[in-house]
Length: 112
Image (cartoon, rainbow, N blue to C red; front, side, top):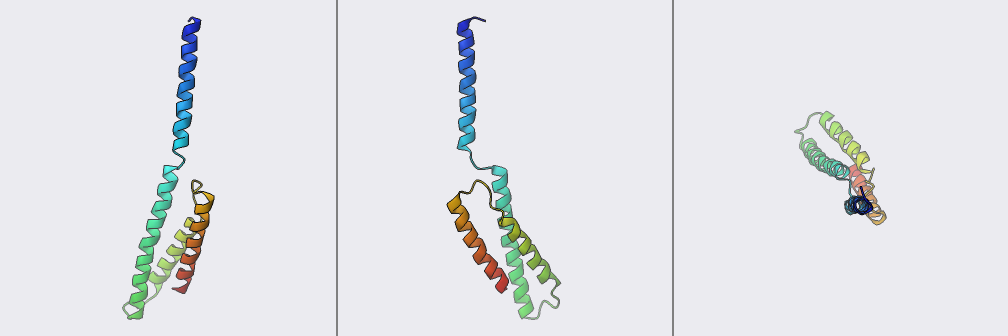
């Protein structure tokens, strides 16, 4: 291998490493972590809907026992605890906003 070929190889490897670095920097969001947080949000919405149905049933005496109500309330608080762990890719300002939203939602849950 002569000097010209060696320089071409070094330049090619440097270009590949720079490209890989730039691709990694352009994708700062961990897709798996984002999907998990999104799934937890969807799960919370579903449980909240069911909990609201349980509350309406209990008010109209359709729900004769409170086990489903307590179960769904427990599930809702568990998902809320998962949502308190904010993903790393959300910046400081986003975390502040998300924390405020979570606190307001916790107050609403406690009123139920």
